[in-house]
Amino acid sequence: MSTENSADLRNRKSSCLITGVSYICASHGKDNEMKILVVGSGGREHAICWKLSKSKLVSKIYCAPGNAGIASIGECVPVAVDDIAGLIDLVTRECIDLTVVGPELPLTLGIVDEFEAKGLRIFGPTKEAAVIEGSKAFAKQFMRTHHIPTAPFKIFDDREEALRFCDETRYPLVIKADGHRQP
Image (tube, rainbow, N blue to C red; front, side):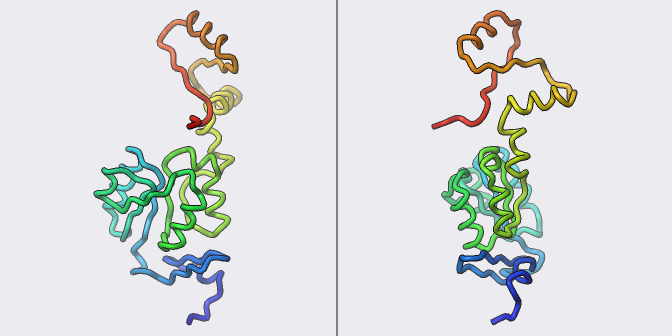
């Protein structure tokens, strides 16, 4: 048994230690080999997995939940993108070195904040920073406030008012919903 303390293990490459969880992963491969989890199931995630698969530094790719195309590159795992606890469990159980998040939903739910709080490596913006992608209204107002060029826009809370605006406006016209679709 190693005499390394938790901080040493947490900082060592190819290692993971989660407080309160019985998974301790010592170096699972060569120092230049990484296990990577890509969160998502779309074309963006497929492209990320494909590019990562070309690296000699990557020993294994997981994708949650993934898709049929991704399955030819890495291991698809049936964990939903919004199941942050399930993703943390997967990363700790499989000793995954880095998580890359594709879709905005887990980012706006705070996946990066929760992973970092557990000492897990993850690539993506924090919950606070992800609001610019998760809220179209916030992004457009931010751009207007900071004089960042953007197309003219109007924000509606009333459906009828929005429909009247569409009838009176010249086309082409882009309509975007703010936030995430509810099932």
